Every structure is written in C-alpha cells, then in structure tokens.
Image: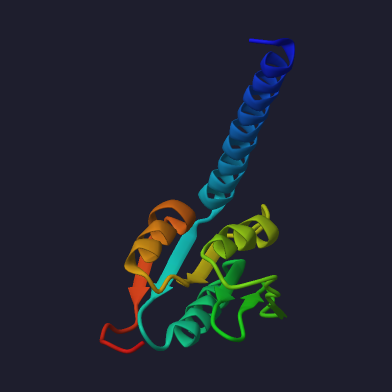
Length: 148
C-alpha cells in the first residue's frame, strides 16, 4: 500500500471511532435523562392520542409532578411544566427521531414525568419508539381499529 492509501485508511478508521464514541455518549445522556424521570407514559392508538396525551399530562401536573408532554400530528407541540405550549418546527418530514430531540431539549433535572405521543405509523417504528427511545412505564392505547 502506498502512503496516501494508508493515510486515507487511518483517517477513515479514526472517523469511525469518533462516530462510535459520539453515538455512545449521546445514548448515555439520553438514558440518564430517561432514568431521572419518575413517570414515563407512551400514548399510542389510532385516534385520540393527542387528547389523551394532554389529559394525562394535566393529571400528572395536578398531582404535583413536573411534567413535559409532546403531541404529534399536523400541530405537533411540546407542552412544558407550566402547561405552556411551543410548536415543533420540522425541517422535513416527521420521524420518530424527533422523540429523542424532545427528551434532549426539554427533559432537564427538575422534570419528573414525560408523556409522549407515539408518532410511528408502522408497527416496527412503534415498537422501536417504545423499546429504545421512550421505554415507558405505562403505555396507553387509545383504540385499535382499521383507520389510516
């Protein structure tokens, strides 16, 4: 191998290692934020998810939990601890990775509860959202019937 090829290979390996280290640290920070929460609720179903998400978050707030909630759909919102709402601005199509962003940006050390609406339509994405992103204590299914 010539010197340029070796240098290129070394650079490629260094970048791969840096990417793995970055990914691992991001995963550890996400896990730490989830572990600090006393309550994690994932709301799924065909219809009524946003309404149920809002209601459950309101109940938790009334129960003195510092609560953050997130709804999806055409008017996706993050509902803060005082009930204040902020729209979610998407640079493109909605993806379940948005759930990770919400946890990173809105779950700070004072937050005790998270109520998050499942945004996966495909059952594989719904399962991934639950098993790897939200890892809820309670999953609420609003209804199950053919719809979309």
